[in-house]
Image (cartoon, rainbow, N blue to C red; front, side):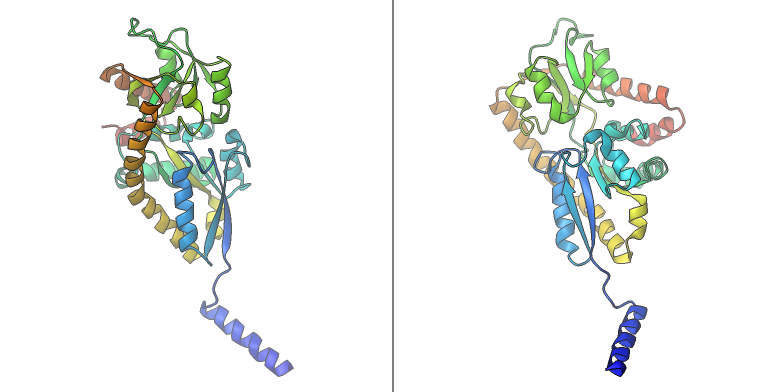
Length: 321
């Protein structure tokens, strides 16, 4: 028996030395800023599901929403390794890495940013400031809008939202203030109550997801044209990445490329559906003219440059047409 046991042990040692023993499946935890069944949770959920399908026996991801980690704490959670991955907009980690906001202003798609060097530039900043890899993301091609519960004062072309308090994020606070509004920063989950209690009379939000979060019941107006660019990044703790073996890292890279191809298809399909949802709900669309968008972008770029002159000018050259 001792001789047989020794032979078996030697055989396993030889297999391990040759690299033919399969690595144990690794499980990662990803926290999303919104639930997986919402408009901006669904693309991450699709990505996770496809990775899990391809990665059986190699790598699996468990996706959870803000009920597991509050939105303001999520970026720090991935930085410190409390969670392995995070899906969310850079505006929610503005304090740690304000340069991420440039993705919201980009005139280029993510594949284009990867070609011109902007993505790698931002990835290095994520490495340094968030201890994270900027793996992939989505949202390019989906704009933000101002939504309100009552009509704006269109006679005042400079500041039509004077007298409004609007829900904001750091990405577009300066713009909303410039058009007359007072602003309040809240997590998405708190907006419905704020609208219901008239604490805010509107909000900035993309075309997508107004029904998912229940806000459409209290919303009467949407103002066009859209401005900025949705940016939802998928980050991974840098230390956790280094612990993955070659097959596991290769799978993640494969899925990064997959997102670049699949996202435009989802975007076009979903945008048409969201327009119909808002129309059917009776939202009135008010066109404020092309200058509305230009003004938003000029103000935002100027605000970022004033906050950080080290990296923003270089990123602006790579990201603005």
